[in-house]
Amino acid sequence: MSIFDRVKKVFKKNAPGIAKATTELAADIAKESAEVFEEVKAKAEVAAKKAGKEAGRVAKDAEKKVAATAKVVEKKAGAAVKTATKVSKAGVAKAVEAVEAAPSSFTTETPAAKETKPAKSRGPLTVPGAGLGRRKEAIARVRIKPGTGVIKVNGRDLAEYFPNKLHQQLITDPFKVLGLQDSYDVVARIQGGGVAGQAGALRLGIARSLNEIDRENNRPALKKAGFLSRDARVIERKKAGLKKARKASQFSKR
Image (cartoon, rainbow, N blue to C red; front, side):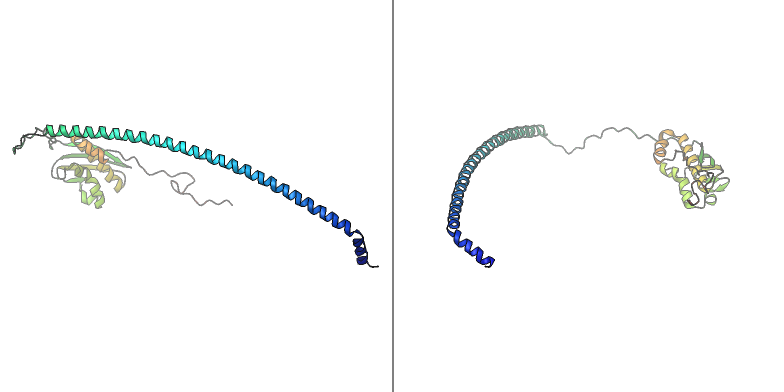
């Protein structure tokens, strides 16, 4: 007899018991399903009640907040109305004062001009002056005297000694700032330094001479332009181990 036949025979013998057990199992499952359904239904009802209570509480809180906000807005509006009323009253009062202060009659006569203090006149331009200027290694000893604007440097004309126009402009800047072009003759002796250094030293000497002649009128303009300041910049010295003041040979680790 095959295994299949044996199983079939056993099933035929126990068929009533199997059917009864299946029926009881189905009944138990149905009963448990009904209980679970009832439990879920009860929980849902409880949750719905809680949600209803929470919604009511939220609605009440919202009503309270709206009422409080309305009160605050009402107070602010009242204060704004009061302020506007005060401002309007003040404006009306000012307008009334302006109308009352307006002249009742008019005239075409020009009022008398107020007396003004006469401008302070510049001192006489007949006073000579002298000054010493330095720049780098150059030293300039300068003397100025009333004249026609002739500048002599070491016995030579300015254009001959300083052919560069920039240097000429640099030297004559103090006279231009004060509006004294062609008012003074300059005699200067310069020694040391190069062309640029000598030009800077001569300008400083001229500015100091003009400052000495009339401090009250000349000093503010010269000071503001920076012509009375000694330029202390000089060439930095060479350092040991370097090619120049700071230039060094390329570093090689190996």
